[in-house]
Length: 90
Image 1 (spheres, rainbow, N blue to C red):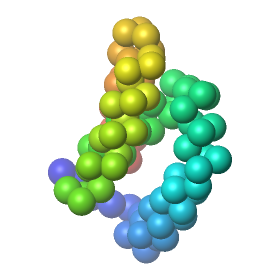
Image 2: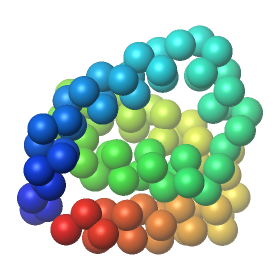
Image 3: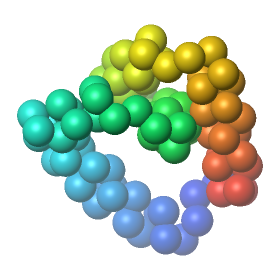
């Protein structure tokens, strides 16, 4: 299990709260439906790994939707990038 950094421990809830506020915006959701990026797919994948059980439902829905629109190569690259992101947090 990953140990959170001092910054994550001190500010993790604030970061998640700010991200949720942005994602709940209809304009933001519309933007993300039409502008998939490798980084976005990787961030959703990494978020699923770090999510609490309560957050897994909404993150999982977004990840499934994004992955359904991505190519197989994009999905593979996103998973590899997410693994790199998670490994760098250790």
